[in-house]
Length: 101
Image (cartoon, rainbow, N blue to C red):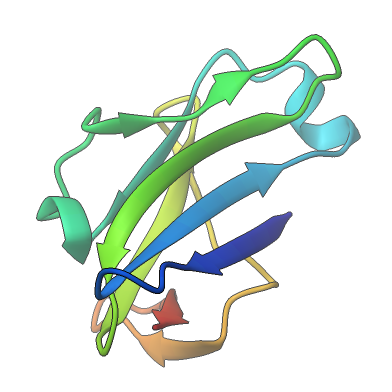
């Protein structure tokens, strides 16, 4: 799992690439990125699987904010990104990944 940030000089925007890789994701049929940037709507930001078995998606997000998010694997397993900037209790007995821009 990894998060790549590219801050734009001309705008208050950061291009963020979310990636998942590893044996546990090779057999997954879907990986969704869900967070407050998409109002926690499932299906709004699906990750695409490359031939290299790496799932990824890119978003343009406003800088100066923090975003909570999680990955939904095959519609049933919620996972955090260990590469997140920090983690916050979700209020549902788990934690959310947090991206600080």
